[in-house]
Length: 215
Ligand SMILES: C[S@@+](CC[C@H](N)C(=O)[O-])C[C@H]1O[C@@H](n2cnc3c(N)ncnc32)[C@H](O)[C@@H]1O
Image (cartoon, rainbow, N blue to C red; front, side, top):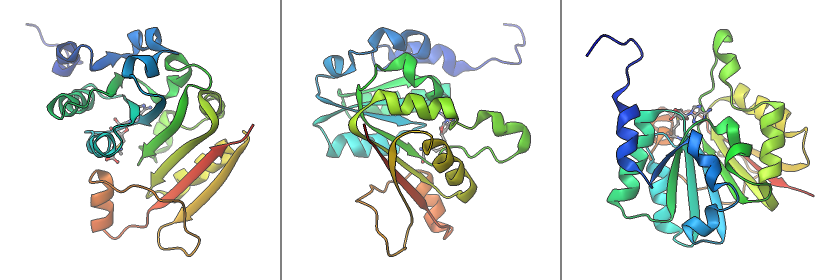
Protein backbone atom coordinates (compact mmCIF):
# COMPACT_ATOMS: atom_id res chain seq x y z
CA UNK A 1 0.00 0.00 0.00
CA UNK A 2 1.33 3.47 -0.87
CA UNK A 3 0.60 6.74 0.86
CA UNK A 4 -2.60 8.26 -0.51
CA UNK A 5 -3.50 11.63 1.06
CA UNK A 6 -7.17 11.17 0.18
CA UNK A 7 -7.49 7.59 1.45
CA UNK A 8 -10.79 6.99 3.25
CA UNK A 9 -11.45 3.41 4.41
CA UNK A 10 -15.19 4.08 4.55
CA UNK A 11 -15.41 4.42 0.77
CA UNK A 12 -14.68 0.69 0.47
CA UNK A 13 -16.83 -0.16 3.49
CA UNK A 14 -19.89 1.38 1.83
CA UNK A 15 -19.95 -1.64 -0.50
CA UNK A 16 -20.52 -3.95 2.49
CA UNK A 17 -23.94 -2.35 2.98
CA UNK A 18 -25.22 -3.04 -0.50
CA UNK A 19 -29.00 -2.73 -0.64
CA UNK A 20 -29.07 -0.42 2.40
CA UNK A 21 -26.53 2.19 1.37
CA UNK A 22 -26.68 3.45 -2.21
CA UNK A 23 -24.05 5.67 -3.76
CA UNK A 24 -25.21 8.88 -5.47
CA UNK A 25 -23.95 7.48 -8.77
CA UNK A 26 -26.57 4.68 -8.53
CA UNK A 27 -29.37 6.53 -6.75
CA UNK A 28 -30.97 7.88 -9.93
CA UNK A 29 -31.87 4.28 -10.89
CA UNK A 30 -34.49 4.43 -8.13
CA UNK A 31 -35.90 7.80 -9.16
CA UNK A 32 -39.67 7.60 -9.30
CA UNK A 33 -39.66 4.12 -7.73
CA UNK A 34 -38.65 4.64 -4.08
CA UNK A 35 -42.14 4.06 -2.72
CA UNK A 36 -42.36 0.76 -4.61
CA UNK A 37 -38.94 -0.33 -3.38
CA UNK A 38 -39.80 0.58 0.21
CA UNK A 39 -43.39 -0.68 -0.18
CA UNK A 40 -44.81 2.48 1.41
CA UNK A 41 -47.14 5.17 0.10
CA UNK A 42 -45.46 8.16 1.70
CA UNK A 43 -41.81 9.02 1.18
CA UNK A 44 -39.86 11.04 3.77
CA UNK A 45 -36.41 12.37 2.86
CA UNK A 46 -33.82 13.52 5.37
CA UNK A 47 -30.75 15.51 4.30
CA UNK A 48 -27.64 15.28 6.47
CA UNK A 49 -28.67 12.59 8.99
CA UNK A 50 -25.23 12.51 10.62
CA UNK A 51 -24.92 9.28 12.58
CA UNK A 52 -28.60 8.50 12.07
CA UNK A 53 -30.17 8.90 15.50
CA UNK A 54 -33.17 10.79 14.19
CA UNK A 55 -33.86 8.38 11.36
CA UNK A 56 -33.94 5.42 13.76
CA UNK A 57 -36.37 7.25 16.05
CA UNK A 58 -38.50 8.28 13.10
CA UNK A 59 -38.67 4.85 11.51
CA UNK A 60 -39.43 3.12 14.79
CA UNK A 61 -42.32 5.50 15.47
CA UNK A 62 -43.57 5.76 11.84
CA UNK A 63 -43.45 2.24 10.38
CA UNK A 64 -46.09 3.39 7.87
CA UNK A 65 -43.60 5.66 6.03
CA UNK A 66 -40.72 5.03 3.64
CA UNK A 67 -37.53 6.95 4.42
CA UNK A 68 -34.48 7.94 2.41
CA UNK A 69 -31.62 9.77 4.16
CA UNK A 70 -28.95 11.54 2.08
CA UNK A 71 -25.58 11.85 3.81
CA UNK A 72 -22.50 13.37 2.19
CA UNK A 73 -19.88 11.74 4.44
CA UNK A 74 -18.97 8.10 3.81
CA UNK A 75 -18.35 7.27 7.47
CA UNK A 76 -21.67 8.73 8.58
CA UNK A 77 -23.44 6.95 5.73
CA UNK A 78 -21.98 3.68 7.04
CA UNK A 79 -23.11 4.52 10.60
CA UNK A 80 -26.64 5.15 9.35
CA UNK A 81 -26.72 1.90 7.38
CA UNK A 82 -25.46 -0.05 10.41
CA UNK A 83 -28.34 1.36 12.45
CA UNK A 84 -30.92 0.44 9.81
CA UNK A 85 -29.63 -3.15 9.77
CA UNK A 86 -29.27 -3.47 13.55
CA UNK A 87 -32.85 -2.30 14.02
CA UNK A 88 -34.18 -4.16 10.98
CA UNK A 89 -35.68 -0.96 9.57
CA UNK A 90 -36.45 -2.31 6.12
CA UNK A 91 -38.43 0.77 5.09
CA UNK A 92 -35.30 2.97 5.20
CA UNK A 93 -32.40 3.49 2.77
CA UNK A 94 -29.34 5.72 2.76
CA UNK A 95 -27.98 7.61 -0.22
CA UNK A 96 -24.30 8.41 0.24
CA UNK A 97 -24.26 11.64 -1.69
CA UNK A 98 -25.03 15.33 -1.87
CA UNK A 99 -28.40 16.70 -0.79
CA UNK A 100 -28.09 19.31 -3.56
CA UNK A 101 -28.78 16.60 -6.14
CA UNK A 102 -32.42 16.07 -5.13
CA UNK A 103 -33.59 16.17 -8.73
CA UNK A 104 -31.24 13.32 -9.65
CA UNK A 105 -32.66 11.10 -6.92
CA UNK A 106 -36.40 11.89 -6.98
CA UNK A 107 -39.11 12.60 -9.51
CA UNK A 108 -41.31 15.67 -9.33
CA UNK A 109 -43.96 15.19 -6.64
CA UNK A 110 -42.41 11.96 -5.29
CA UNK A 111 -41.60 13.22 -1.78
CA UNK A 112 -44.10 14.02 1.01
CA UNK A 113 -41.68 15.61 3.47
CA UNK A 114 -38.07 16.76 3.61
CA UNK A 115 -36.39 16.97 7.02
CA UNK A 116 -33.13 18.80 7.66
CA UNK A 117 -31.84 18.80 11.23
CA UNK A 118 -28.99 21.18 11.98
CA UNK A 119 -27.50 21.63 8.51
CA UNK A 120 -23.83 22.56 8.49
CA UNK A 121 -23.96 26.41 8.56
CA UNK A 122 -20.59 26.98 6.81
CA UNK A 123 -19.90 30.30 8.50
CA UNK A 124 -16.44 31.04 7.09
CA UNK A 125 -16.45 33.14 3.93
CA UNK A 126 -14.40 30.59 1.97
CA UNK A 127 -16.83 27.80 2.95
CA UNK A 128 -20.02 29.63 1.97
CA UNK A 129 -20.04 27.87 -1.42
CA UNK A 130 -20.95 24.65 0.45
CA UNK A 131 -24.24 26.01 1.84
CA UNK A 132 -27.03 23.64 0.85
CA UNK A 133 -29.67 26.31 0.24
CA UNK A 134 -29.38 28.10 -3.11
CA UNK A 135 -32.01 29.34 -5.56
CA UNK A 136 -31.72 26.13 -7.58
CA UNK A 137 -31.91 23.89 -4.49
CA UNK A 138 -35.06 25.71 -3.36
CA UNK A 139 -36.59 25.27 -6.83
CA UNK A 140 -35.71 21.55 -6.89
CA UNK A 141 -37.12 21.11 -3.39
CA UNK A 142 -40.38 22.66 -4.52
CA UNK A 143 -40.54 20.33 -7.52
CA UNK A 144 -39.81 17.03 -5.76
CA UNK A 145 -42.42 17.72 -3.05
CA UNK A 146 -45.98 16.59 -3.73
CA UNK A 147 -49.06 18.74 -3.12
CA UNK A 148 -48.97 20.08 0.44
CA UNK A 149 -45.50 18.58 0.77
CA UNK A 150 -43.48 19.91 3.68
CA UNK A 151 -39.98 20.99 4.54
CA UNK A 152 -39.03 20.87 8.24
CA UNK A 153 -35.74 22.42 9.24
CA UNK A 154 -34.09 23.07 12.60
CA UNK A 155 -30.97 25.05 13.34
CA UNK A 156 -29.31 26.95 16.15
CA UNK A 157 -27.95 29.38 13.55
CA UNK A 158 -29.98 32.54 13.00
CA UNK A 159 -28.09 33.77 9.91
CA UNK A 160 -28.41 30.39 8.26
CA UNK A 161 -32.18 30.42 8.80
CA UNK A 162 -32.30 33.86 7.16
CA UNK A 163 -30.65 32.38 4.08
CA UNK A 164 -33.16 29.51 4.11
CA UNK A 165 -36.16 31.85 4.25
CA UNK A 166 -34.71 34.10 1.55
CA UNK A 167 -34.18 31.15 -0.79
CA UNK A 168 -37.57 29.55 -0.02
CA UNK A 169 -39.32 32.85 -0.71
CA UNK A 170 -38.51 32.45 -4.40
CA UNK A 171 -40.98 29.53 -4.54
CA UNK A 172 -44.64 29.27 -3.57
CA UNK A 173 -44.14 28.01 -0.03
CA UNK A 174 -46.25 28.92 2.99
CA UNK A 175 -43.57 29.52 5.63
CA UNK A 176 -43.87 29.30 9.41
CA UNK A 177 -40.79 30.16 11.40
CA UNK A 178 -40.29 30.04 15.11
CA UNK A 179 -37.79 30.20 17.92
CA UNK A 180 -38.40 27.61 20.56
CA UNK A 181 -40.15 29.16 23.53
CA UNK A 182 -41.88 31.86 21.44
CA UNK A 183 -45.61 32.22 21.89
CA UNK A 184 -46.43 31.50 18.24
CA UNK A 185 -46.07 27.77 18.30
CA UNK A 186 -45.29 25.61 15.34
CA UNK A 187 -47.01 22.35 14.56
CA UNK A 188 -45.44 19.46 16.54
CA UNK A 189 -41.80 18.95 15.70
CA UNK A 190 -39.90 15.86 16.81
CA UNK A 191 -36.88 16.14 19.05
CA UNK A 192 -34.00 13.71 19.01
CA UNK A 193 -30.57 12.98 20.47
CA UNK A 194 -28.30 14.27 17.67
CA UNK A 195 -26.73 17.72 17.56
CA UNK A 196 -29.89 18.98 19.21
CA UNK A 197 -29.12 17.37 22.55
CA UNK A 198 -25.74 19.09 22.62
CA UNK A 199 -27.25 22.47 21.70
CA UNK A 200 -29.95 22.13 24.34
CA UNK A 201 -27.37 21.26 26.98
CA UNK A 202 -25.46 24.43 25.97
CA UNK A 203 -28.69 26.45 26.36
CA UNK A 204 -28.62 27.63 22.73
CA UNK A 205 -31.81 28.83 21.06
CA UNK A 206 -33.21 26.50 18.44
CA UNK A 207 -34.98 27.90 15.38
CA UNK A 208 -37.46 26.00 13.28
CA UNK A 209 -38.95 26.51 9.83
CA UNK A 210 -41.86 24.63 8.40
CA UNK A 211 -42.60 25.35 4.74
CA UNK A 212 -45.63 23.90 2.96
CA UNK A 213 -45.78 23.69 -0.80
CA UNK A 214 -48.64 25.60 -2.42
CA UNK A 215 -49.66 25.00 -6.03
C1 LIG B 1 -24.24 19.46 11.74
S1 LIG B 1 -24.41 17.82 11.20
C2 LIG B 1 -26.04 17.40 11.80
C3 LIG B 1 -26.28 15.92 11.86
C4 LIG B 1 -27.67 15.50 12.33
N1 LIG B 1 -28.71 15.97 11.43
C5 LIG B 1 -27.93 15.98 13.72
O1 LIG B 1 -28.71 16.92 13.88
O2 LIG B 1 -27.34 15.41 14.65
C6 LIG B 1 -24.68 18.06 9.46
C7 LIG B 1 -24.68 16.77 8.67
O3 LIG B 1 -25.02 17.07 7.32
C8 LIG B 1 -24.10 16.42 6.45
N2 LIG B 1 -24.05 17.25 5.24
C9 LIG B 1 -23.49 18.47 5.10
N3 LIG B 1 -23.68 18.96 3.88
C10 LIG B 1 -24.41 18.01 3.21
C11 LIG B 1 -24.92 17.91 1.90
N4 LIG B 1 -24.73 18.89 1.01
N5 LIG B 1 -25.61 16.81 1.55
C12 LIG B 1 -25.79 15.80 2.45
N6 LIG B 1 -25.32 15.83 3.70
C13 LIG B 1 -24.65 16.92 4.09
C14 LIG B 1 -22.81 16.38 7.22
O4 LIG B 1 -21.94 15.39 6.73
C15 LIG B 1 -23.33 16.08 8.62
O5 LIG B 1 -23.50 14.70 8.82
